[in-house]
Length: 110
Length: 113
Image (cartoon, rainbow over all chains, first blue to last red; front, side, top):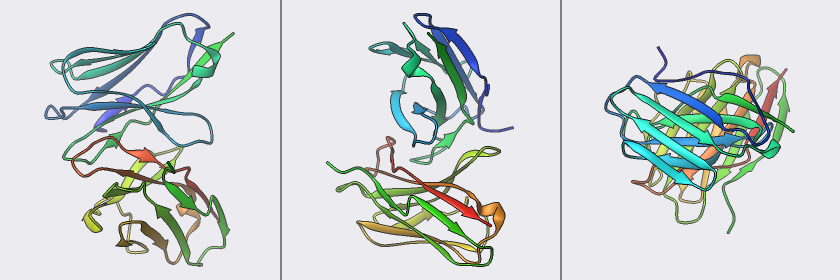
């Protein structure tokens, strides 16, 4: 079992809808999680990180962490076509070392 | 402020040749990471350095791969000899020691024929 798992998608949502991206992890000791966005042919770009249980909001993005259930989610409100990308979830199994999920491809249609 | 700089952006080589990928981290960052990304396996950590010292190379696939960081502003990833299965995008990332936020370079797309 991979340490961080994501549905590869694609997840298709219409413009203006809420996109919900999910990630599960196996290491109960993981304390922090990161969401990276990767456009086709480009490098991963950090968009959110979360260290504690609950929600963290930043503009149209909300990260949610549930340590008891071992899942992390990313909600994108008012989705735009420019949000179409692959979203990578990452968690540290140890100090500094990140393990990435394989990513969920999001398609936002106009 | 310049980000992580990688070169070359594209590399096409023949099987058996030596390949050297280069990375310049963000100034002031003292942790450097090398990743490989493929469709099948996603983004995998190969090796990372703190203060120019290799900390974890457990992701290096085999002895054909080696990485060095001779100073705080430069690192290389070398593949010798290269094989077609090494074809991938190789990313370099940097961060502050003690910080988990990693910033990625633009990547090097390697094709081994």
